[in-house]
Length: 253
Image (tube, rainbow, N blue to C red):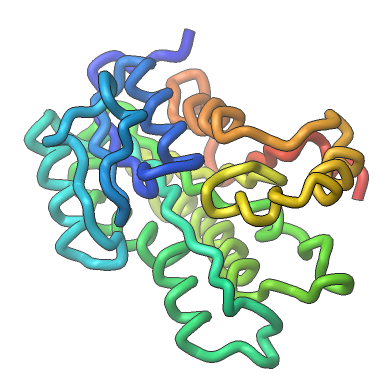
């Protein structure tokens, strides 16, 4: 059993996909979750997170982050952070051609918002008996995308995830003396609202499944389970790592 009794967490990107799965799984583990997303509170949170525990807003807005921290503090503190807010721009492409605003917005949501949440939560995290944070990065933060030659790169997304991996490792080292653990989860192919257009083509899905040793596309719950482990006391000696959850893809590259 993973141990979470009396703990509080802030989960970003909880309006769907991986963030939603994390929010649900953590509440099922007994954690009080403050969830946030730019989208409306999803019905899937019914019975898990009430209206007062959901903050609707842009995670790049410092005031939204501050409100999440305030509500978590009112509930008892901040023990855990799960930063899952993410964006994949339709304007993404090669860094040689990308407009600056595409890179800036992608970095702000995918990376800088997580750093700002960590910064604003730091005082409360230091007061926690077992503080930890997990940042949802990506396999492409560690390796190039498979379609870099066939379909062209998506450099804004890839750069943002690589930056998240690097930032998480740095935070892990800087905060280890305070007992705060920091890790990333790096998903492979996972069906989420952000990626559903990619998986609309059955032929492409079959090709992805064929490239994955476990023979299937990932589910948000697969990533949520990894996040729950990394937050738990059972992972109390784990920090500064990048846990790849990809069905074995990277093992064969």
